[in-house]
Image (cartoon, rainbow, N blue to C red; front, side, top):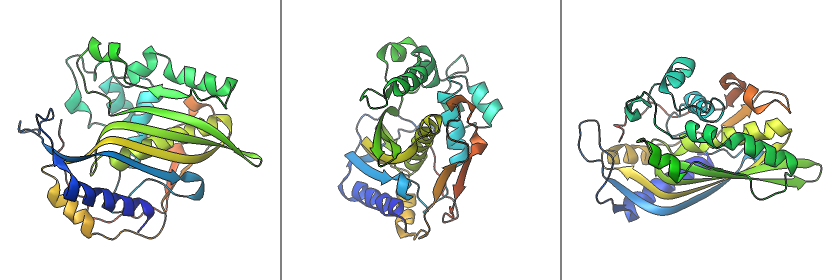
Length: 278
């Protein structure tokens, strides 16, 4: 198994053995029933991307291309419009979180656009790569109060550079308030690795380390069977590697989904089915 597989199993086992059940849960399943979860608080992992250590499991297939398309919708298009996500990228699973106007509310891409988050981030890194203020923060209280909509889960990321010899590496930290361990864990991690790679390419740097902190890591109460199935699986020993096949210095906004290539990825099948909490 890869290191990501080992950490995945450790987290699943920790939740099953030591987690506590949620109370007064907000989410519901599509049939209207309350979506309770078993959870632990304070999960942290570190991945050395420069040495081929990526946060993606091989214990089940992860839809990397769809995840990256969703990321571009948020940070390139800076949109909350589900028609853009569906018609431009063919990603349709966000529709369950739509509000009356066909968007997800003043959230995610709309927040990025309103506060010029990417513009400010790129400008800050260009002016002084060594500063310690390179932050994306999607948790903007005025935005959250403006409309209904899904509260951001992966809400903050931070970026730092390191010089090692003649090379400059870009490190990234993702902070997530809440994470569905079996469904979204590696999707969210790889999305922000992709964002880290885009930023590094923009400046001609190398990707360095990826740090991942989750406050509430949970398994929903209709997923315990799938959790035990994942614990029984043995993944591949071959390391999956995500590559961004564009020249150094490529503008952040010119990078496309097809520029990302996943190599050595041979996940265990069949895929597992999950009834999502919404």
